[in-house]
Amino acid sequence: MAVLLATVVSAPAQASQLVARNTSAERLSVSPDGRAIVTYRADGRLRHVLVWGAVDARMPSTSRKQVEFQIDYSGGWKRFGQPLWKARRNACGKYAGPALPWVVASCTAPDGSHWALQRWQRSQANFARPPFKAGHAAWELRLSHWSGPVARLDVWLDWSYGGRWQHLFGRLSYRGHPVHGFTTTPTGDPLDSYGRVLYLDTLDSAYGTGWRRENGFVARRPYGTFCYGFVPHRIPTGETLPPGTGRRYRLATSGPGVTPDVSWEGDALGDYDSGSTLDREHEARMNELQQLIASGSDSCHS
Image 1 (tube, helix red, strand yellow):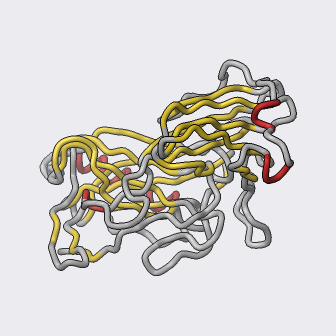
Image 2 (image 1 turned 180 degrees about the vertical axis):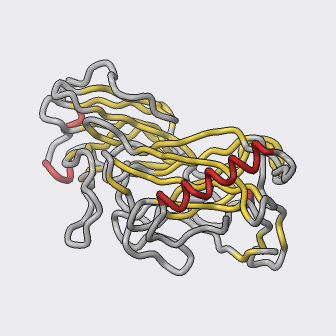
């Protein structure tokens, strides 16, 4: 069975906010009045960007947009008529928040809130294909500002179609509440500021050695649940690709609002053995769990 899936690339939903692409020499400072100054090199130039005006995230809502930063790429000239990046004293101290992936700079402000810069390749072509859209494979520099817990990814592994294919499922939550959007395009791009795409990578798979992008998919309403089967895929060129099963899997997503990006990583289960009591019991438990957490949502094939 081959499944035809289009490449999913996240729409510009608000999240840990994109500041720039393909940067180096990243630095972060925060003034006493809570404005961040992000310094980096890009395209051969040193840049100073002023960012302010948001913290944490709102719960999903159809009546108001998700929180977002205000950004002045002139360092204060455009918005305030002066280069504030030069005059602001750094009041942000040693980082005291939770461990995060891909951090290049972080600090904790006097009010106890945290700031972080993360740099990672969020947007990639699915099924380890070469980049074919603007932004594919770029290293995105993303800024976040939050207090308290960050988003949580719960992920479980089992099999589908009677053990024929490996399968994962789970949920995305923030402060105990589901994270999800309300509408998407036919190919799965979020159309509102609450939607989140989860990016799935596979290690040492049929695509080659190292980490390769397998696919992207959204956390679904109403419970922030998701599921994915490692099955053959027929891509728009007509080629059928083998399942992207690997030794390990990694799932990552942009946090809701301006909270940081989070990830999960775990070992693959391997092939299903119908003669194994352990495999049969594990599959039965996972099927029950998936039905429990995804009740009321579209379910995956078990």
